[in-house]
Each structure stands twice: as C-alpha cells, then as structure tokens.
Length: 354
Image 1 (cartoon, rainbow, N blue to C red):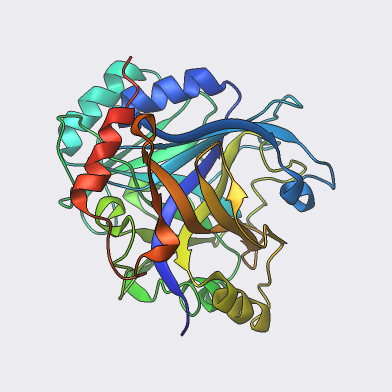
Image 2 (cartoon, helix red, strand yellow):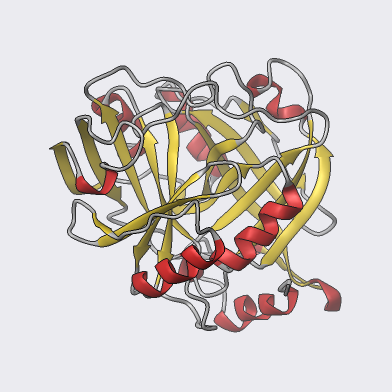
C-alpha cells in the first residue's frame, strides 16, 4: 500500500476563550500535557476561510494515561462565531467527540462537579449496551464519555483522552469510499437503523438515524500507537431530514469541532491514492511545518464527501523533554515501531498543574 494510517492522532476544537478552555480540558479530561502552544498565521487554511489568511493560537494537549490529543484552536484575528442553527447528530461534519474513561460512574460524578449545568444528569445505554453520558464545554461542543479498558499509564484522573468521533454524512456508501477503503476504518462494529436511547435527550434525538460504528482491522503499531490506543469513527445519516453542514456560513476556527487529525506515515503515497480516488489535498505544507520552536510536521487537509475537514499529519520532529533538549526525529524510526514507553513517560515533566 505504501502508506500507514496509525489512527486518529487528535481532534481539533475551536473555542472562543483559549485559556478558559485549556483549563477546563485539564480539569475535566486530564489534558494537561502540551506539545506546543503558538500563535501563527494560517495561510494554508485560506481555502477553508473564504480565501482569507487568519491568525490563530493553537495548543496540542494530551492525557498521558491514554487516548488521542486535542488541538485547541482560537482565532486572534477575528471573533469566532458559533453555529447558525441548532446542531443535531447527523448534521454534516463532526458532531461529537468520544472521550475514554476507566470508570464511567466516577467520571460522571467528576464531570457533574465541574459542569453541573452542562452534563447529563443520568447515564444512558448506547447501541452496544454500554453505559454512557454526554456533556458540553463552554462553547457547546458535544462530548460523549465511554469506558475503555486500554490504558498507557495511571495517575488517578477519572478521564482519558479522545478515542473517537461521530461524523454526520449524507450517504453511508459514499462515506465508506474514504473512511473504509482508504483510511482503513474497515471493521463494522455495528450497523443499526432506528431511534436510539443514548440520543433521545439530544436535539433531534427522537428522529430516525442510520448509525455505523467503524474501527481499524489493522490499527497502526508505530509512533504514539501505544499511548493513543484503538479508535473508532461513527458515521451517522439523519433519515428524517437532510443534514446541514455544521460549519454552514462559517469558517475554520469559528467555534466548533473543526477537524479530525490522522497520524500517517508515507504522505506522498497516501496523497497519490487520495488524488486518484477524488479526495486530493485541499492544502499541503509540502514538507516540514514548524509548530512552535521544536515541533515539525508535514500537514495536509482533505474533505470527506460532505466537506468534513480531515487533517493528515506526518510527524517529523517532536520535543520529548524540551527543558533538557531531548527531541525525537520520527523520520529515522521504523513506521511500525512504537516509541519506547520511557520516552513517552518523560512527557509528564511538561505537565501543567492548576
């Protein structure tokens, strides 16, 4: 195949108050380890910003217990706007972010203590019979909490990081041509149609939906795989109405769940496959992009068939212990070899404690 999709690396969430949201995510989800935090122009995103070059602050944060990262984004060159209509599952784009926890009841109690007015009062049952609940952050972004038994370390926090997304699409089969056939989320965990208990209390929750939960039959084994863990993508079609674009009349970095980032190796080979199948890069750094002083990556963006924004990231260099000048040149390592656990555990020295 020539390329490897390691899995979801991060989810990009655009917020209106950067410092307040970073603090909330630290307290709520244990996302207290920043990879970078920088203010920069975003010329490559002008195709998603009405042709304008915006300036934004971005910070990539991680929970060392396990799970994928969150890239928190906030524009500095304009005031971000929220959705122009009330969002429901099945609207086109990323409708919710799935967060992992080792103990759903403990996490529920923890979340209610922090967000008493923005967290479900009761636990509900998802299509697999799992206990779950939903909460919203300061910008009304929707998060679903689910238990997981896969963890990298333990520090006692009741939450982990990201383990999946729910993405609204207009046609399941068209979506499969990207998510299953190219990006490797080829294992169907469930394929269900109807109304669902876990969504009944959400906007539009009494409606009928087609829900397909996907995972990777062969998830990547290299890089951060042992820390990020297995991930899922749930594709959703609203059957009783036509889903609307979540970022309708808005741009990237307006508030919302802006994009999903996938960790890849072999960007050029993947680019050739995507171009051949009609999902060519919308933007491309061509080579290493500096994100802060000591992080460099190769970034590209594509759109799914319904214009959901997907970032593809090939990491070149990352800081492990910046204070001691310890950095990792990822390109010199085998794409199927995970980073040593001691090296990833060294990231704990970068933690921000409130």
